[in-house]
Image (cartoon, rainbow, N blue to C red):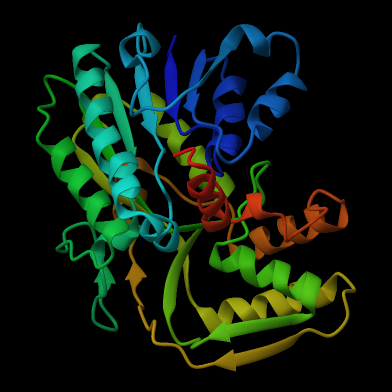
Length: 340
């Protein structure tokens, strides 16, 4: 039976992923600072009684905790923990580095020492940087990260790739921008931002609009991590995969949001376009993961918009301005309180 440790497992993706792992009856350990809330703990507590025997939570920091004890008898690690967007990282680059890189090195060393069989790392499609228009961004293209956030993602990949497969199987995912509903919701991601703006302000503000960005539904993202837990070694060991769907212009996403939200009876939604200096645009190819692992997304951006609308009208997002939905606001408060 697989024993899985999810580092950063109480976050946006982890809160959807961990219940899926529990559904397979795998014992799960979650290591998380819980800076962004304890929604996952509350969700698991509301499930059937047997869940408590399958899951263990460590409210702790990978930079300083006893990783040896946490990794004892662990078969697979899914490493999600990081300061997960550029503005949040740049609030304090030293803290960003300590979490996104220094802590990763500490985890990696501990995983090798503990003889963990498989290490699944959540990198980012942002490691490619800006590619020329019309270029299909495949796994073979050079990494040209622009921001500190994406640079440290690339550094972590480099460190992981130096580990021999005889010591530990590793697999690197480069996900597109995740979208959709999660118990630990984020409203600072493109699709989610535009949807909640339409619902609460009856207006969508588009900066630029011609930029093309890849997206992936959070359910597909979580299902992919689950798939990687049990894939045979020869299919994933030492492999790097892009993971995304719906390479859409920002303007296309805005039009899709407008149509779906108006379909919920929310009244007419205006789209306002303004200039921007951020014209990053790229088209990420997920052909490799489809060809080699048979992975096909089940959902898309429209599903994510509908899920968010349904959650909003069901009262699951009582205050869209709550700081906990925005990583940068949470990090600002943590820094102000000296809790980082």
